[in-house]
Length: 129
Length: 369
Image (cartoon, rainbow over the protein chains, first blue to last red):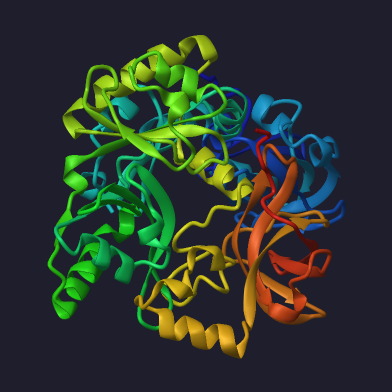
């Protein structure tokens, strides 16, 4: 049983946010990578790009399908995880850690209040079959 | 579609119990993966994998005119089949498009066993039966899918695996031949056929015995590292081997000549359904053709993506995916005939961006014999 970090918040589209002040680190959840299967390609925005809550941030591809990643919050991309371009499989190995996707300077930090707690997310994916 | 409305194979409970990830595949609740698509793919290339393909349909044609009818409704040369031999063939409409692609097995002069695609089986049966009636062939066409479960054991260790539980001399069965013989004590039809590009067998048994045979194969193959595999790996395996998938490379609006399947069309065998249309296509020249490609730019072509050449629309991807064994992003697509030579560069539209690709020779993967 995977435990979802308590200090993250989550979306129903299976992204996570780790916020510190107005800086947010964003990734996809263990459940997301597990559902996708072997991830072979990650498409991320450029540094400086503006992302908006609920809008497409990028995409991940597994061997069998492409899935959009939706931004859990709004703001400006300050950093992207360059290692994923050459090693997308890290998303399967460490989705809550080393395989974070982007860091974003939030323009509306209150948006994270709308997101799910670890417990709520765990219940959500537990109920989704 | 709710789960309850999906059709199930006799091995459904086995898949569910072993934690396979299930998907709706053409109205069937089927395992898409067990241990993971790439792991299963490599297992089949390097050792042996087990597939439940019981969703596939079976049609039996018997009676005095069985050969004539089979010859007339299919494109390949049935008269050349010997007892115990099978071949790949096409079932066409009069206009030359595909009703289905099929495997024809000659069991006896008056008995042909045809394996067809799951989602086409009712349509195939009706098509053949209608032609039988219209032409007055003295034959019986039986929709026989309920009589068979089908298990594919595929990979370089498939023969050793299956040999442990059958007295049939498997090494004596040549590629695309079959035999009747017990498997795990159960009467079975053992065909040296497959959809993976590897050596292997497809075993047809009575549905109530499927779970028993499945379990026996898993036990027999344990020492070789056998793994149950899902439809995900089946798809990447067949794509690397450039085997067509109905609804993708072929369908009612595509004919075998443009699908690069001219080798299953035997014009000189006499009349068959679709022959006139195909002769016209052949004589007037093909306009488009199926080719294999590799992505040279960063991106993966996927089923249905548009392709362009010189900025103009040129065709579409029929199947596209990373190829786990070839280690490249590969696919099949239709291109205008003038653009189909090896080395031709074109673009696949990936999320609104043209990404470079190049026509390559196929199959992408060929096993060493």
